[in-house]
Image 1 (tube, rainbow, N blue to C red):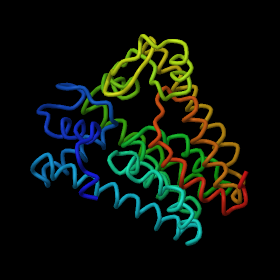
Image 2 (cartoon, rainbow, N blue to C red; image 1 turned 135 degrees about the vertical axis):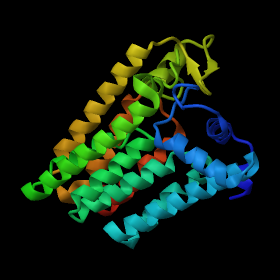
Image 3 (cartoon, one colour; image 1 turned 30 degrees about the horizontal axis):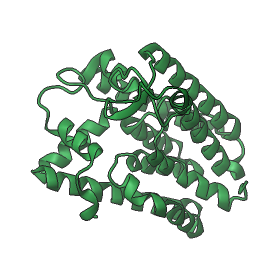
Image 4 (cartoon, helix red, strand yellow; image 1 turned 60 degrees about the horizontal axis):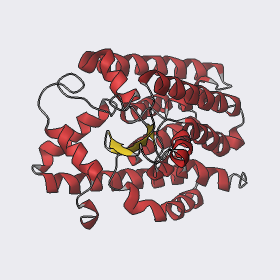
Length: 291
């Protein structure tokens, strides 16, 4: 793991955010939801220097990966955990240098809590995931759509409280512009080349390919278009989670379909995002939805 913590653009960007002075989103721009810069600053304060920070972040991600495996074993059985670990073997060096595993861990804990009829805990874990990356938000439909009225009411109440707490904290720290920076990836003006639309644009337009906001981008877009596409992706993912929430034996397929739709329609897509699909794919596989 220490060898994996060598120079990396993402880890260096995390260090840049961690060591920046002033208020995030106000003094300097941040493309991550508010729990991420908080984590970076905590880890940096404990680590001390850049090299130790990189190593500490890799170990933090490794711990989150272990949490996913243990949560799947607890919620769905050890075979599901084993399938997850096998599925993610090719991705280890790709995502151990990035934040993507942490929201996947909290989302997995949320789905497992939902399976064990703990809607308040499920809502809390899912919103913690949103505090790192926005993508777990559509999975809150699982809590809201519970068949049990008492469980549903507790889940909705916990969800509302969590949304208010996260939203209020975010607005206090960075204001509306803080949300805009995250949704538009610091006002990036091109299509992320690995996204569905970006890949199509890149096929026809090679000249505009460039590095922008620490990622390869192509063509031209606008913050309004980015927000509209993200809203469409979220609504599609939310509707799939809503439709499948009533079928407990299809929980893996519902989870997988929702997050996959979000990724396909998202303005940003990277190979390491596959770790968001892997826990759901493992559950779907064992539940019989192998197609």
